[in-house]
Image (cartoon, rainbow, N blue to C red; front, side, top):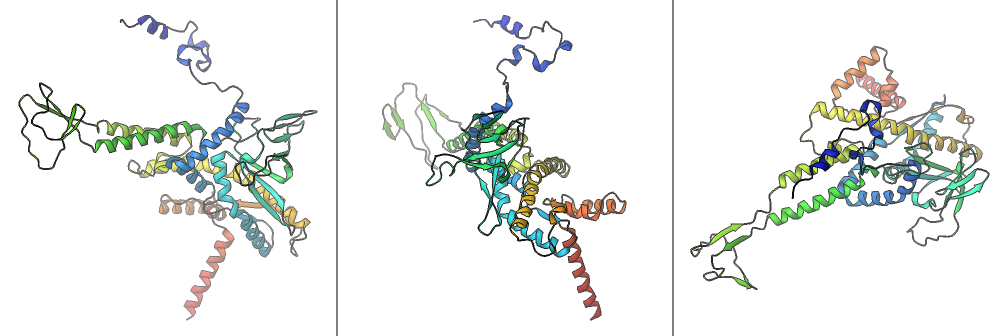
Length: 444
């Protein structure tokens, strides 16, 4: 059958409209046939949220790459913990406030970050405890009743369990009494929690987006295909360890061979050190099941690179494989990852969680009469949150650069110390104690 060159000619036929008169991304040429289109991204992300969340949870628990993605991003966003630095003029009050708030938030941070990355969103219910203190509780994303969507009239509405007023301001959250799948879960009426008592933390991808989407969404399908390809390669390696020989005779007989007969086939075992004399006209061939393994391994590495790019990580971070990395490439990759992590730290962890929680915590303390003497009006003073510092890539050069920047007036000591994840007051106190010890030794 002759090749239909007419079809090929139509495929490569020049577009009747010159390229300079149109935007290629909106063209309707054959090359765009089958391409995906995301119509109404707000509704699309809402429709994909539940399935993506469930698949991301499975990928996190069942695949090494999914687990590594979540773990690496949790370490980048949370690290060894955030520091709270109130700017109150009294040092004792600053210290007490910082310790109390960090004791409140530290138990939540890892679980919060893990849910944020895996599920794409996390909810924090700001409850009041029995003694009048604030007791924040993490709410699973699927406990917000996503099936609840209706018009409330006068411009108010509920979308996927979140209630809005006519000005598009969130007024309440409708949550199930128990998370789906929990023991003794009941599926009656939902609880309406005012928005002031709930924090909703997620990365808004599109204006008007209501619910968050798993950070693993761009790579979930590729993670599944990669995992299946890895299993298939493992099975191939097991098969490759089995050597099979095929004996062909001119007349198809098995005379002169000893073995087990199975139907019309004779199974002859291969024994170490055995010598066999075959009849004339016999041909022996062996299977070669291990061919193509090298190409398969390179293909898997290419898949890992695409997965890493899809979740904003480097190949080395995803796989732990540093065989092809050098100092320059590793530093460039880490700097790019850190810029992205710092952006998410400020906009998600600090602005959507720590700061609103801090203001609510102070208000509850004042209302409950838990404010110590001299602490009144503390909410009028600003607060600073210090994210976890980064480990040095080249300690000597980086320290020398910081020292030079401080000497030139381009940085302050406080900025440099905060960048390492330290509190400058604690550092100065430690240095003062070291100096006092040194003086005592000199006096002796």
